[in-house]
Image 1 (cartoon, helix red, strand yellow):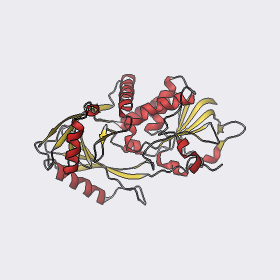
Image 2 (cartoon, rainbow, N blue to C red; image 1 turned 120 degrees about the horizontal axis):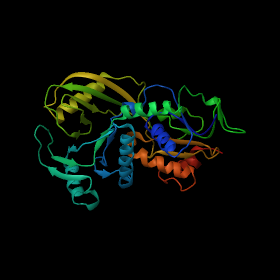
Image 3 (cartoon, rainbow, N blue to C red; image 1 turned 60 degrees about the vertical axis):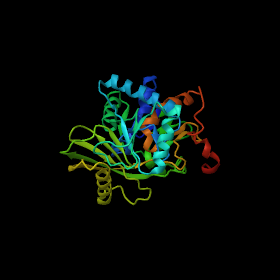
Image 4 (spheres, helix red, strand yellow; image 1 turned 90 degrees about the horizontal axis):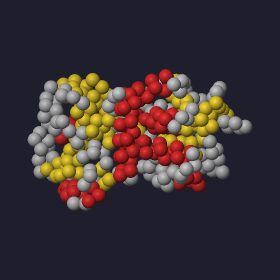
Length: 351
């Protein structure tokens, strides 16, 4: 079978890349091992201003419009909303964060993302006040990935299988089993550490745990950000997360993470009383050493590519990078220097 692109992995990166390629009439096949991936677990938060210093995410002024256009397009295609726009309250935890908040509110290039500072909000415990953020929200990642999987299946563009790297033939022509692709793109998440061509890249995977809860109390109608986060799903249900564990020995949920998340939520919003935990999920974020994605072609095998390493900002960053990757594939432009794996050619790809 002759195709244009074989994609390995049906997380958010592989799914959105497949969608964008197929819109452009590429012949695509997505391989996936069928296991729950980090994208399915992720909250899908989109938050343009992050960190203790309240800094805009890199290139957010181009990433955010591309993400919103992508999710509107998908909503029209599947007649289902996937992105929920919702304001965020950033609970300021110390004098430094308060100072940075006031500074950012006076900077013109932050006005699109920050609304105001409030000294207090009913039901919220924030000694240094609350920063109201805009253009925030969350993506229904599990629902979106399910819809895209069905779309791929309906178009004979999906196979559930465990890829064996030894089945990939590089010469004289690229081939995997009965498939002869022009290109192979690896979108494997943290499993990429075992990839024989891209496993040398400096991934720094991080374990994260998330809770899904029911409550009988009155839930705040906004996303809360207090070091961890709270997302209201409806009047009685919410999610809270996520833990951050760079060193881990397994991918199992832990009672320690549950205790940490619930304690942090109670400290931030004492009125929220979870009466039942109906979900406790674990995901491994494919984070990277320099906090930038790994995108591009292998230096010695030009038809092998990686599209990975988006960490916790995949919902925001992936749509724009999909378009950039395809443009580079078509030799219309070069990849962004920050994401292009050329930055690691000399140090991580021996001749």
